[in-house]
Structures are given as structure tokens and as C-alpha cells.
Image (tube, rainbow over all chains, first blue to last red; front, side, top):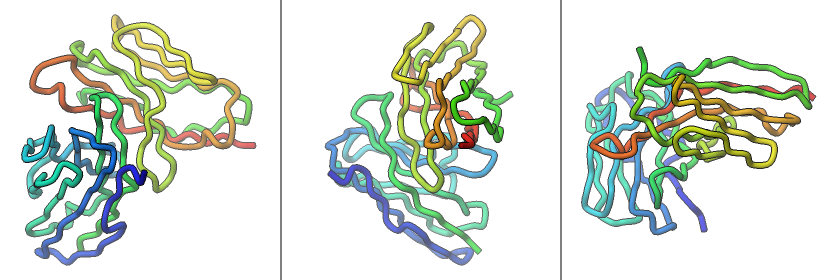
Length: 111
Length: 114
């Protein structure tokens, strides 16, 4: 079992560029989440999904879109990247609400 | 006031010391309390989980919840260098619209010196 994997691991973007972060899990979990982690701010929920075809906004959704077309994948999109979106992005999945399994993270820099 | 407050540290202790990590919170509706451990450049991993008030022990780790004071603690006995990491508290509601979300503290960075 690979658990939760994230692609890519690192990325540098210029302001205004777009990109998609891919999260995949092989644990057959219903729930999936996207977080960002910034120094001094902790982990903040961007969007989440409670099942295939569903998505919902978290604490900091502005500037991001998500899709969950397949149960095992959760995509996070940045349509027009801004320097404020420089962060480490973590995907997580869970079967039950309390135990979220996290991926290794994607380090994104927006210049 | 942020919903969950956690001293970011850093906290440095000698090997073998007892470590106490704490979080306070403002929302009395939180019912589930968790501690995650995050090693440098890795994703967080669940350490312990408790429901409502009380204590829970797992090896060298003990989690305590005092709902009357809105205060949770994680104790690490006989600390080891391998315990060096950032510890994040997290909590969630039992029901309602916000129950899908975990609210995290900012994390406390711990270093255990050999």
C-alpha cells in the first residue's frame, strides 16, 4: 500500500500561471482533504470531499478549485497563481473522521 | 481570538525528560481531540485520539482533556531523540455543519537532546 501520494513534490510557478496538484489514495477512503501549511499559521483546510463527485469549501477556499471525479483521486487547481499561495500543500484521506492519513506534501513557490 | 491556541516553542529538553505539550481552545462544542506528530518535511501522522474529557495512555504517551478548562495536554515520558518533531493538536465538533473539519493548533516544535 502506498497510502496517500501527492504529485508533484516541488513546483515553482510565476504569478498568473495555473497548475493542478494531484492526490491519490489506495485505502478506499471516502473522505479526502486539501490543506495548506504556512509558518505561524498551522494547517488550514482549503477544500474537502465526502465522496466521489462531491466537494465542499473549507476555511481558506479562495483562489482554489477541486474535483473528485474518481474515489481515489482528489485534484487541487490554482487557476491564476499568486505569491500568497506559496505554501506547503498536504492532501489527506480518512475512513473515519478522526484518523486522517496525510501525504508527503507539495512545496509550491509562486514568484 | 483563534479557536485553538498552541505555544509554537521551540521546546528543547534533555533525553529522558518528561515533556508536556498543551493547547487551549475557545469553542466548547469541540468533542473530539487529537494529537498529530509531524517530522521535518513530512506529513502529520496521528498519535492519539480522545473523545470528551479524561485521560488516554499509549506507551510513553498520555493525552488529557479538561473540557471545563478548555485545555488539552500531551505528556511524553522518557523522551527520546526520535521524539523530536512538531506536535499538532487538533479538534472537531461532534455534529453539525462544521463537524467535517478538523481545527488544528499551530504546532509546538520539540527537540530532545541526547
